[in-house]
Image 1 (cartoon, rainbow, N blue to C red):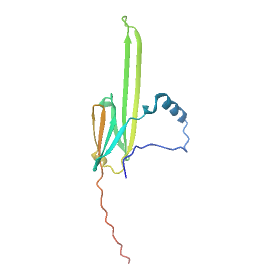
Image 2: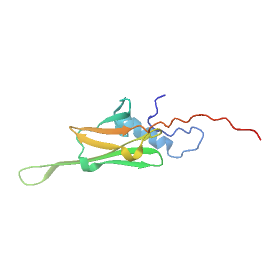
Image 3: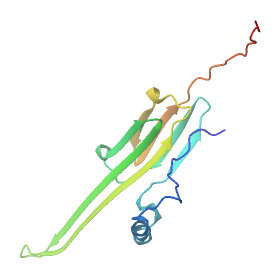
Length: 142
């Protein structure tokens, strides 16, 4: 069975007072405003996660591992200002984006995870835990 899957919270029964606001924001900014594209490949003894994060500085990408969950967060800030010949501001644009995605690490050796960021792609190598073969035994009845 495929052991590493994206982790999402799905609780339809709980009351969420901000659900309408979140739905509005998703409709306004699009579905990809909170996540990024990832590919996960099974290499036999490890998984390779590749996340497309073009235009991000390496310093603004964070990988946190806690309680069997790996969360990748990337943050982008952009400022642009245009002035005329008299040094008056004609156009000023600012944008901010926070992208995050979480993954369940069941069956992964968390201490051996490594990451590299090159050419806009974050590569995370996640070695699988060695499977311990437990042989059965028969109990003697006294």
